[in-house]
Length: 616
View (tube, rainbow, N blue to C red):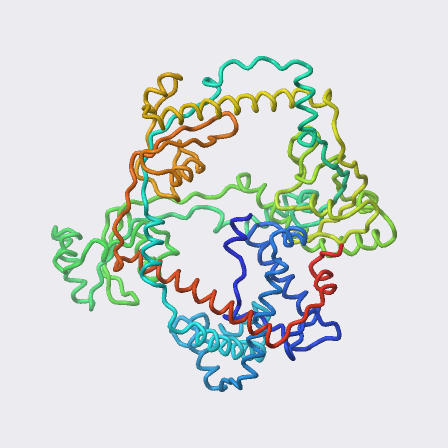
């Protein structure tokens, strides 16, 4: 998730954003110069951003998660930056004519149809998809263009210096080779069981690691087409009716290997057909006409895939190996030859009945979701809990007696009866016992949930977790011994020893890895060892932790290779473009920061906390 957030991190949005700066309300969240951003406008923008990221993750993003990633501050900074640029455009008297705005819109490739020209219907459909009216979109594009003018002027002439490009190229493309030894439990030796006193002392020092987490008892009920469809029964009569309606699409149609030669007129086609009847092959005839196999062969296709109906009818009326008489098609007169024939497969009702019933059930269920939503809300409004309301409506509620914040049961296993993508656990940990929670939208429906009980976090006694404590103590002993042994080996290598000799002395295998870069992913060498290798000088030795605490790695850098920098290469050109974008963003960011200070910026922290859930 952190990686995705890194990719989606918000930059200073001088390149355009939804219109959030008009229709000022009574409640103001921020003010930049004379521009006000209302609480409701920011709420809409922030909600849209959460939904966008939720679609990227494949599951909803909660307010707590968004704040943990700093999304709330990023959206606020982006909004204020745009408002500051809009204010500056007004102060400078910048403007853009209607004609230029329309020229820019007409040139946008997103609005061009198949002919390559501006398509009004495509334009209207596209902007509606993103919640714009035509008037609002045009106004937004005018503001975007003015922001670009300012940003372009501020960053004009910026170019990364040659020394920066060369330094970054060497950093990224430097290659190293190492020889290394992995130390594991075999080199740690025998670890005797700890005495009761030793174990008790270790437990006292690490009590927080064995603390029982907070658990919550919760119940929830799902009302969406998929769940309702599970409870619905579909008769064979209804399923057979659907089967007959879709019979042609459920089976596999007959497919044929079809070849054709197209002639400009019927006389040439008839003459060619006579030559085939006299013994000339279809293939030789194609060669005489300068046709490649790709020009003749249509492939093995179904009748419906042949564009020309006349050609399709002829192709599927011939036996295998036969050549047709001249056929008048849309693009000329053709001779058609049939190769291999793959018979179609007729669908059987028994083979598709289960899927058809599931499909019908889901369709019927979609019509019931809205009705059940209203009924559940009525029951909840009357004071019924989730379980009680579900029972009254004949729905199946799920109760989990104890789950921690990470979605695990007291035995350490993940909860298995929560559907994938439903983040009800984190929602429950943001609520409390007795709170009437808003339903969660999920898979075209809703999920209602209640927190029934809370078991606070507590310290466990040694007797409760003795096996885990003994295992952790043993792991720490192994790690300590391996670290000590690795340190001794590095000291010997620094004094002129050879890693091969040290490996043999401890019964370990000497391995090598050659020509890897900083960003390499090697199957036998963890990322930590690669990082450590690039911090170590040539011919010097080092050590680092391996996989888990039961492995340690001792290595020696055997080679360092710095490839020459080719400033004319495509890689360097791309690197230069990336650096230039970074310099531009930094320059514009500094300009906007200065602008905000000069214009004057104020933020209603209470309104901001209310929108982003920080005051819950």
